[in-house]
Image (cartoon, rainbow, N blue to C red; front, side):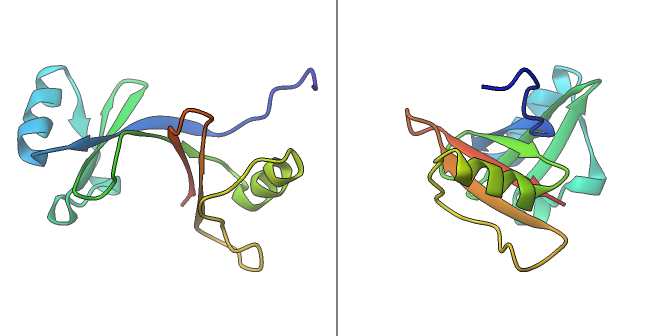
Length: 117
C-alpha cells in the first residue's frame, strides 16, 4: 500500500430512474440544475449539479445504480488496476487515445464505471 492515494477523478452517482421527467423535477426541488453540456434527455439521461454534488439520471440506460468516475488518464488507471489484480467487466481499448471507458464491480456486485470524456 502506498502513502499517496490513487486519484480516480471526479465522481458522481448514476441513478437508474423509472421516469426521467419526474426524477428531474424531484431533484430540481432539491436545488439540482441540469447541466446541458452533459445531458441528452431524448436519449433518457441527464446530468444534474448542486454546487459540488453531481448526479446522473438514466432511464432504461443502466441496469442499476452505479458510481461513475471521470479519471484524467483512463488507460494508465486501467493498467494500474490490472496490475493490482482487479477483474474487468468491460475494458477500454489500450491501443487508442481519447474518450474511453471501463467497468468493474466491487466484491458485493456494485458497478463502478470509469469514463474519460
